[in-house]
Length: 199
Image 1 (cartoon, helix red, strand yellow):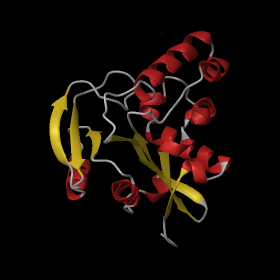
Image 2: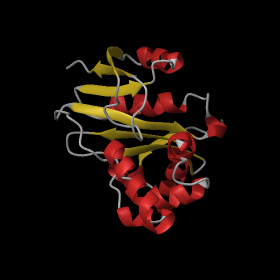
Image 3: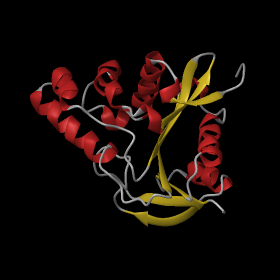
Image 4: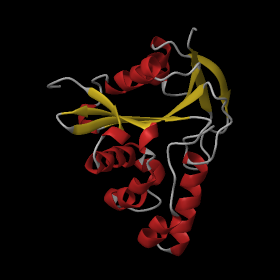
């Protein structure tokens, strides 16, 4: 990895960077999004409008976004979807279903208090995985956002991720059969973890 990773809010970056963030998002979650289209770029076109730029953080290397992470709070989630964008690209039936599914998982308010941050949509460009980018992004949130507690979810079989979060100071709260937030429809059980920031 040449150069140093710079971490910025998407609100500080250009529209082209937002597009790159959406591409990384779709690439990372394509298995859950593939019901919409076999063409990832079409899905990117449909959802790029939805990113709440103030709630997303991007790792930038050589002026390219290589990783993303979002922070949802009591004030709102990290996406806001427009059904017209889905219907335009996928037709009335599939477009509306896609809109409802993503809205339910990524826009629906979470039961958080004012001191909590829900970390979601952690993703890294495939060409840069294994370089610690997601760790740097999440460490940035922990060090720079003023919250008392950070919460996230992990698939129980993803032992590597669980160990990574434990190294960042997270501990397991509970396992549950349905996700609190970032899922595209019902899925397998999830492990919820949190980190309380000492005052």
